Length: 264
Length: 264
DNA sequence: ACCTGAACACCGTTCAAGT
DNA sequence: ACCTGAACACCGTTCAAGT
Image (cartoon, rainbow over all chains, first blue to last red; front, side):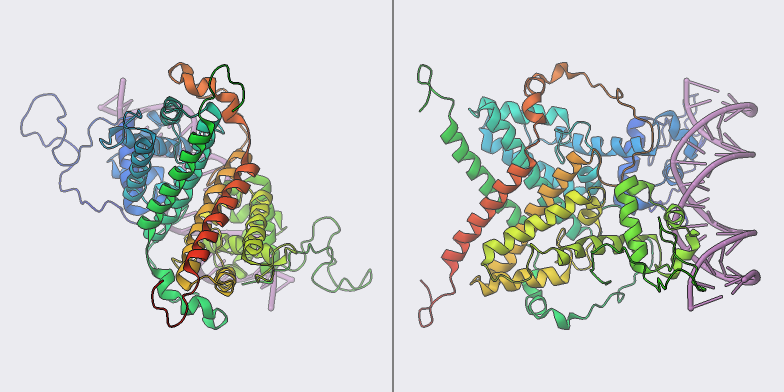
């Protein structure tokens, strides 16, 4: 186990006096100046993306930041909370995505489409982190992965209700949407990232390994080419369209009933 | 690849000869007689179900079996492979489920329904294990969780093809089915089990904790009762029905084309 | 105020020994 | 043949110290 740190650090942590003054002066390339919760979470995400979830230890993350592990405890209560923070920070990237709006000003379909694609972008950008997003115990039972944030739940429900969905229909749409996104993105990320979930990519390559006897699975063998195609993107679009279609029907059927007309 | 054999084992593997002789005689309550890969995997599942995934260490599992941790290495190459074995063993429980058939003798809808419900039963029976099923890197990219077994992939494809689906439609159905099951079951298990994924239930209860300011989320607050309803079962049935409906359309439209009629 | 050294209890895993 | 003791390198976390 050596330093993970792929981006070698040609600049030493300290002095580097040069421009003088009392300020430690953040080094140009990689800063190791003020430790800071945001910086720690960012480094953790970077580290996981680059080395896999299993490789992340407090000690190695410290080293990655040019600091001893114990220094992290001033900003983060412990490893578990670090991981919670990572999930939160990754999901919060949605907030900075110019393609994703918080309100349904262009209609609920547009809102759902953009939100879904935004989440997909995040999942694909952080394939090693996503299983954590999918899998960490939610704060409340109704904060469902992968949406995991009160702000987005609020925004989702408002968008649907403002568009004419009843409260019941909005909640049920939220459930169906979460489940669709979770399944698709977790599967997609698991296929891309080679690995998924609480796993490692240590060093051994053990390719051969379990060359299970394929003789018993003729159909699988025959369809291997078909099965190996990566249709993730198309599947995603199709399933999303299908979901929107279903919701459209719900909306049409459940239009908030006219006043003075208690039934039909 | 172990024996599927879910039928609990009231009889110890070995002799059980009378009441005496040289045999160490398995203690009545917990057997610690012959260690054995099957017994180890069973104990691991039991342990995870009871104590959470995070609590499972080689040393504690050893203790649970009345043995030192080092003894396990004679039957299992290491912790990671132990977890792979756990996933496999849990999925293999399907094989002993009398409600789930390997062939579509009662039609493909019946087959898909039974398979889905069988998997759901397993997920709910082992909520602490399921995140592992959802999340472990698949052996091949097209062995998609939660189906995770060549035997079931083979059986699935055969069932669909035998029912008249084209090979392409069968593969695409397999993809849609996996994604639906994964999303629903992971979400359901995460809500039930209080926790999910690589998590712990150590001892502290920390209820209060993050009492986030709900003032900013009026819609969430207003709909809290609705959001808190557990509609998992109904959602599951509905989404499954919807999927079957979609597939029915695919089947009807893509009926293997008549000979001598190359288009329409 | 912020970081480190040393220490504690615990891990996975190896290997030479015990029986 | 099967299990254990002792050991190694590594972990998360604490706390008294350093600067």
